[in-house]
Amino acid sequence: MKDYSRLSSNDMRADYTKKFKQKYSGKKGTFATLRKVFFYARQYRFYLYLSLFMDVLNTLCNVFLPIFIGKCINCAVGVGNVDFNSLYINMLIVLGLALGSAITNFINKISLANYNYKGTFTIRDKLFEKLQNLPIGYIDTTSHGDLISRMINDIDIMTDGFLESFAVALSGLTTIVGTFVAMLLLNLKLAAIIIILTPLSIIISLIIVKKSKKHVKKEVDLQGEISGYLEEYIGGERIVKAFNHEEKSIENFKILNERYATTAKKSIFYSTLTNPSTRFINGLVYGAVGLFGCILALNGEILVGTITSYLSYANSFGEPFTNISDQVTDIQQAFAAAARVFTVLEEKNEPSDEALPDLLDCTGEVELKNVNFSYVPKTQLIQNLNLSVKRGQKVAIVGPTGCGKSTIINLLMRFYDVNSGYITVSDTPIKEVSRNSLRAKYGMVLQDTWLFNSTIRANIAYGNPNAPIEDIIAAAKLAGIHEYIEKLPKKYDTEIIEGGSNLSQGEKQLICIARVMLLKPPMLILDEATSNIDTRTEKSVQDAFDTMMKGRTSFVVAHRLSTITSADIILVMNKGQIIEQGTHKELLQKKGFYANLYNSQFESSN
Image (cartoon, rainbow, N blue to C red; front, side, top):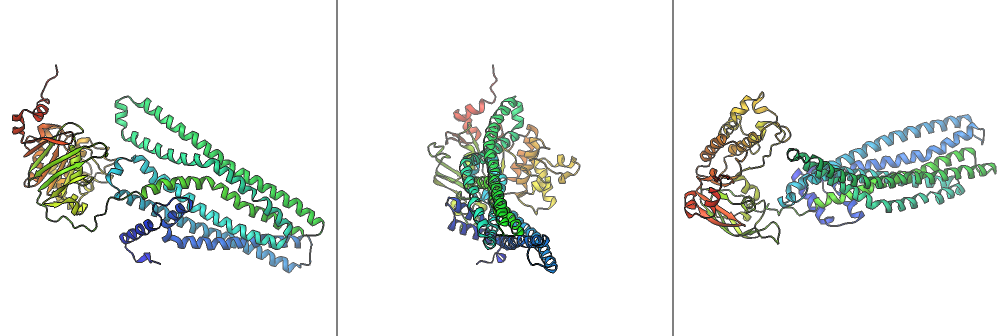
């Protein structure tokens, strides 16, 4: 058995992933799902073993307790040849067993809680790690709200349903076995009544479970759908209000919520039906034991204290069935949630490049040769694309929406891989070097800003957390955001909240530009990077970019053609192909597609 305490976190992750894939990946079914869950919690199995050991001791205490209570009752009513010394001894034993039951139950619950929450931590950690290793294509095509729901809600449902219900089942099993043995030793006739009637609760539970299964699965799926809807609309609340779409969005949510409520009602109905049904059977058992026990006592076959013990055993023997029936809905929800969680965990990772060397010497030459690419196999986008970029050139990519401009950026950064052809950087095919080293050679600024909840200083230093404040300030000055930051009460220590909701779009963009300025990479990608900046600020930022990228290669995607007139090469794209190429002046002289596109900016509407 591997000693995980001697492994580093990276080694542990690799070992876990390898073993998991070998044993469980792709396997389905009840037991396969359970094995997957417990596999992730296996390093905390000490708590599980301790919980089970305490549970056995607790069961023993609870099994012997009714016996000695019955002896105390027999002594109190004057039945049998028991003296007062025996009564006191039995009372002390009862006290000791009750105390032992309380202590073992406490340790059992603490151990189980540790096992449960540590297991939950591990699975959630693995799922987040998985998200970092999935291809961008999977993230792009999956509802972000649904992924958040799987990360938070489904994992909680899964671990609560499996880990806690598993403990309840094992505890119930030990109680059933211990109580069963004690009943057989005390009186076979009363034991027969309990053993014959109690299993009826199992039959009823199985019938109800079969009815409720489909509703429980649908309920969990709808939870993820609602989370996705909320994430989508909360993030786009300004657009909703701008287009007066509040009533329609409310109507859509009501429809979705009503579907969830209807399904949840059916699920809750069956789950609430299980418990009273089993308790009804337990009540019948309790009454039958009391009635038949009285008959036996009147005939002198048993003592009064024995009846009391058996009534206690009737409850003890039936209680596990009730407890397990209480967990039926939780277990069903856990299986449905586990299917959603393991669907993500078993997705194929982005192909590993650990064995590939790093891209060390990057002079900035980039070449695309016979590149073909499509997001959807049946819909071709990039077709036979050829491009050669020399060191230090500024390449602008223009064209109508959907022509493939941003797709080229995705391919350069290896967010997606080409279907055929190849891309090289400094004469090195990018598929032959690690992604991290390739991406480190680019500085990237997108149209959509991304800021995290921390200080402005930390956001600028995102790519270089150890950068001194002097370098951060210098980068901010180049981006034209320094003066604004200095006017804030806490300056560079000002907190950015909710993705930058306390900043304007232009300010957020300038901080993202400063982030790249700090790194000074050999190549730069600007995908509509100045689209949210006013004209005056844009001029200063463009000057800063020109200074920083002197001697470096840059790719600029732009809709505002006035911003790329100084580019060394302008690539005009349409339907995934480069249809024109040249400088701004050369392309205007051709009076082709680019010239029409450029001049259309200045045409006045009549």
